[in-house]
Amino acid sequence: MNAALSGFHPDGHGASRAHTGQLGGFAAEQLLRLCEVVRLSPTDATAYAQVLTDALGPVAERPLALPPPARSFLSDDHTPVEFSLAFLPGTTPGLRVLLEPGCGSDDLVENGRIGLGSIRAMADRWGFSTGQLDRLEDLFFPASPEGPLALWCALELRPGGVPRVKVYLNPAANGRDRTADTVREALARLGHRRAFDALPPADTYPFLALDLGDWDAPRAKVYLTHHGLSAAEAGVLPRMTPHPGRPRVEEFFRTAGGFAADGAGRLSGRPALSCHSFTETATGLPSGFTLHVPVRDYVRHDGQARERAVAVLRRHGIDGAWLDRALSAVTSRRLEDGVGLIAYVALVHEGDRPPRVTVYVSSEAYEVRPPLEALPSHEWAGAAL
Image 1 (cartoon, one colour):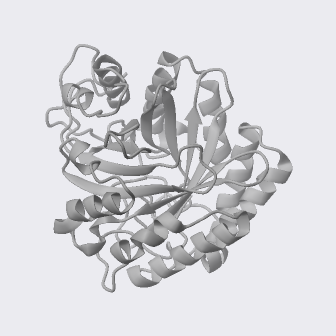
Image 2: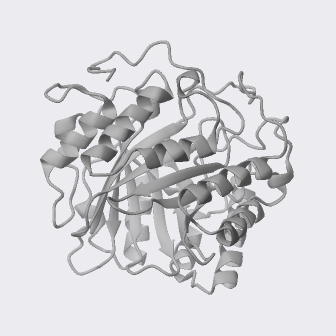
Image 3: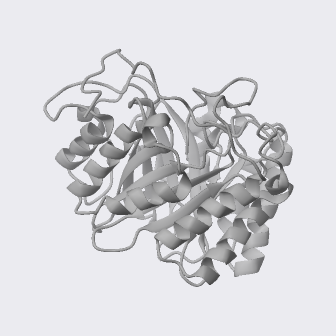
């Protein structure tokens, strides 16, 4: 869920790329190892690896010796695949994979057409409705779309070989100056007519996401960007009931961002994201809140990013060894030799459930970004652990 393209070589070739083989095989092998970490059966793991390569289509057979097939906004090196692990105390992490089915095309119309076709093929295969997506098709897939993406698909991998499915849509499809209007209209069409007015102030709205299929309470999720965010400002972003509590949100922000416990400062580079989930239409209030910190831009290397993530996990009663095993499943490189493997660290609140920590892990199929020589200095504090 990478919200910028900083650190990538303009010609599409990463300075430290050393991978061979094909894109689909590379990502599928990472997924198979991650499935083993989270204790999915070999049968389920094989099925999900096949789902991943099928969703990528012909791009799955593209040699990694070639540049990325398109400038995918999904990751900094344009790999159209990203993994994430959802952690709760006392249980095995959940595994998700985010991908861009239309990644072989730079044309947003064609990209969207392929993406919609992929989602509808999944709906036929697993027997779920695309009704909510259908209500929004004309809004998010106009004749001349704009913006950085058309459609992404996230798969939450469960025992049994049938994933939960989410789609991510582009509110800038009708123009950057109309993102707020597009989000408001989308929420209204989904029955959430009062939801937009419940959102906190934002710089922009990068994504709207929908749960499709077998969910206990399907969500419409609105993502917001917040440039120059401080801990105090992060603490007042939630609008959900019950409120997660300002101290908890602020503490997470400071830990993930690397600020001193009693220090001030702002994320002066890549912005934080908040996500507000809506499941019921009566109150107009969100039922969930997530704060995403783009940790990769505020550490020198992934060793520091790992320390930040483990500190958050431990604060919530979660063994950091799970994350270490997951990182080893994705790459064999030393964490100190690059930055960006851990893209985001997020804290998730849903209703009265315990908080969940999510860590987003990059595939790095095309490039390992070199360690940062310097961190953002403007209004920055507490850069190192």
